[in-house]
Amino acid sequence: MKGLVNSSIFLKAVLNEEVGLRTGKLLSHLAVLEIPGCEKLSYFTDGGMNTAPDLEAKKQILTNGIEALHALGTPCPNVALLTANE
Image 1 (cartoon, rainbow, N blue to C red):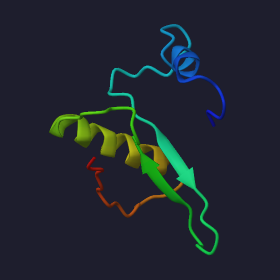
Image 2: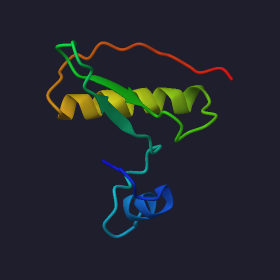
Image 3: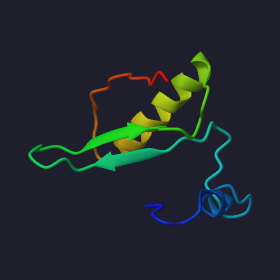
Image 4: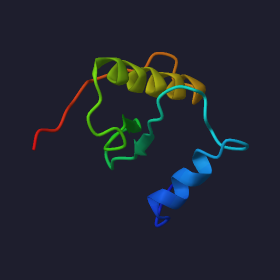
């Protein structure tokens, strides 16, 4: 959880070439929400990290989220694509 850590400090550690999380793929994030009254956890990905993704970037962001959920034990996550419009 990022918490109160400045994003530049947090991402510097994530992107560190020697010990970071670089994979050669587009970097995106996955957040989890525990909503009172809901049985299941809810997840959302890339809420602002990639500010203007093209179609290929959107595909990679979705793939990253699904792969992360698989790793967390969700074999077949339900997916909804949403976008903000300001």
